[in-house]
Length: 195
Image (cartoon, rainbow, N blue to C red):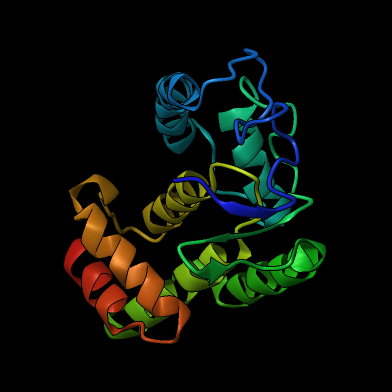
């Protein structure tokens, strides 16, 4: 799903909204296919091989670099444009580092949710999901890195989620509703899918 960005063509091939990439692919559908095939394997490998240690925003950016470095020169670097999607405005690019530090300092103070259980865990996890979604620090790949990070956090806490089993349309609606403060649908989805 294309983003609304400012300016629209920043970092894209001239006359397109296709991000400049290491393959010099200038067709959006072709780039999507290549991107999916590369990132799918690397997301699985990262989940298995990268230890959930020294977790900070630098760790989060490292995950993005690990997964997207074969495709984009800017992998692991925060975006330098403002973005929105489906009417949702994400964090201003010049506030990303500050907001990210708050998220990850809060997560550290809560010991990565390892001491939370039941409804308290669902509440904290939902709030973290909403915060990371608003942060949206990268030009592309935010959802995939967010799901990878949250899956790693859950594994570290002795829990599990399979995002592929969640209805994509329902999840999108819940995420959009959460932006305006209505997190009940999102909580229900996590309550039903975290084991």
